[in-house]
Image (cartoon, rainbow, N blue to C red):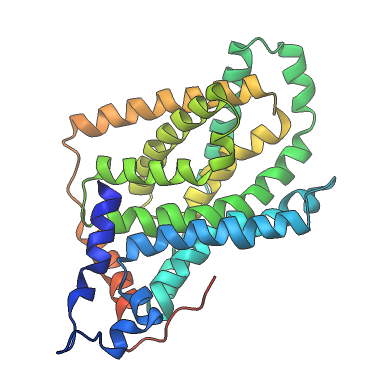
Length: 305
């Protein structure tokens, strides 16, 4: 129903026709039609289009191989699809405001805190599924490799995804919905975007979706705590992914996502107890700015993906 609402909002302007039943030149222009689509729907469509054409096309032409660079670089088109879509939707007028959200602004203390939290979560999940403490101790000796993965996860998955999911989409949705509803919409889009994981088996898909649900609420709480600073959210994203680079056994991955899901439920209950706050004026101001930038007739049309 939410998607249907986006579509109706995006296309309701197209009913105006000239006398004689002919559509005006502006209405018939596909570029004009693209610019008039609801910004949220436009962002979602562009994110999926870029990831599953350019992104996976690059992966097919240049598949990942051994070595850190070859593990991450071929995935650039996929993980940066949300960021590129957000920049295209905001246009020149909103891009600067969006990119400034990556400024650390003195939030460096979150780096060790979040990385430690990510390690603790995967250690707990590993012990629950029966990984021996000795094996974990041997893995800990690979901390330089973990540090390298954390940095690369921040640069690629962290910045590329969070600039779109929590940098643009979440504040945009929070101008129309309360925090819980907005977070659930982000979780649904974020989860469906990982379609190949959803096709990897019922157990894995269920654990992953539950984890994405929980992480969405954890990240929303963090987003509010740091006033929308996407540098911190990118570090948080990297803190989730980097430990999985060293402990990638499927049972461990499933367990840690279930753990994130449970932690997210705690945040959800807390948000419900607090009354599910109304969007703040700063949320509304940012979303209004990017919406105007995305739909202004005076602006040059955004380039194609």
